[in-house]
Amino acid sequence: MSAKDEPSDEEMRKLLLPNPSDDQLIAAVQKSFAKPGQKVSIVKKLESYDDKNFWVDIDGTYYLAKCHNGVESRDFIKLWKEESAHEKSVIHMQTTIMKHLNENGVTTSNPLSPILDTELPIPASIHEMPVHSESHSPCELVLRLFSWVPGRTMNSVKMLPLEALVDAGRYLGKLSVALSSIDTSKLAACKRYHQWDGKNTKDLKDFVQYVDDPTRKSMVESVIAAFEEQLIDSKDSEKLPVGLIHSDFNDANMLLDENCCVSGVIDFGDTVESWKVLDLSVAMAYAMLTSYGNMNRGISAAAAFLRGYSSVCTLTAEERQHLVLLIACRLSCSVTLGAYSYKQSPENDYLLLHAKPGWDALGTIWGTDVEKRKEMRSTLDKVFEQACSTKKGETGVIDCSDLSFPDPQVVDPFGEMRAKSSNKRQRNN
Image (cartoon, rainbow, N blue to C red):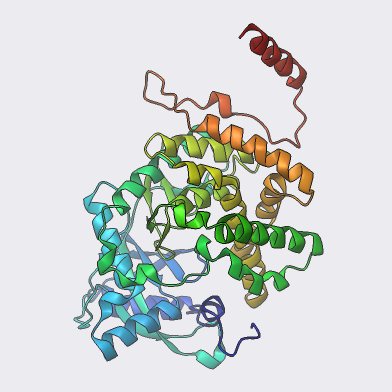
């Protein structure tokens, strides 16, 4: 808990994290979504951060069951019961977005209506469930059942090709275009405060205390300081285009087909209206943590993602200028809030998923040495400028052979030869 009188949004999310047993989840799905005689079973518990997600089987058909975090659940129930204004809720916003995307060529889940008439204004049901905090249990939580989107998550692919990241970047561009056509004036929840929104990076100050290692703590503090100086104090943040963003386009939320091409996107729990470039910086940060990026190819992974995105959407000069910093901001957010969350729920190994690779990636692009950081920033700007030039082969596949290189900590046996070739080309020009 922080020193503030009231728990922050992030702290409440940990207190009200759903904690149903398998039998409780099955009973709730059986009651609300299964017809008499149909059998409900859990195929697998899915990775999740604030909610609890389950891959369920109802009489041979697969579905996704989502038990919403108590923060969003309370918000929806209060707005529905007390104000008749459920349209202001996050859950309504997510429903609207998923419907819009499926109608505009972006595949995602669709919420299904309960068998019983719940009188709710959206496809959902409400059940009393235990949450992480015993003092808040049981808590009324919103339970929803979604159509199952076929495919495997990117983070389940242990040998990910670089081309898959280029395609993922292109898919995010397509998603961004679709999101930009949604009228946000009717979605009040997209304007809510959310700690994971990159605009709120300075508020990480409240959570840095949970990072035990002093060197790592100092590194995050330097990112926060740079964010305040270069974006907030300079007023550059006011120059960044604003729009509706997914805000969590990571390898756990991308579904791939048999060719390792993105076939769908899931999880709109972090969706907000914010700086549009944040969708890209978040995705590039997590691209560094994929099975490809983790093989000392983090910068290559981020650059390839940028090339795919740039084939659909063009960045402004201001967005390009601050891209490296915003990637560092997301990595800082992930490792810092991850450290806080793990201390609240040490049994949840998912919270460690991006921990070590996240710190490694932050060390690569930011580090603790100020002079090396400046040199890295200059080099990354050049790499990302190169990545923004799209090259398509005869098959329509975006070429990324020029972006296939190891991170700087890896010895390049051809480095000297490349330098000589580059110098020779410069002299000839």
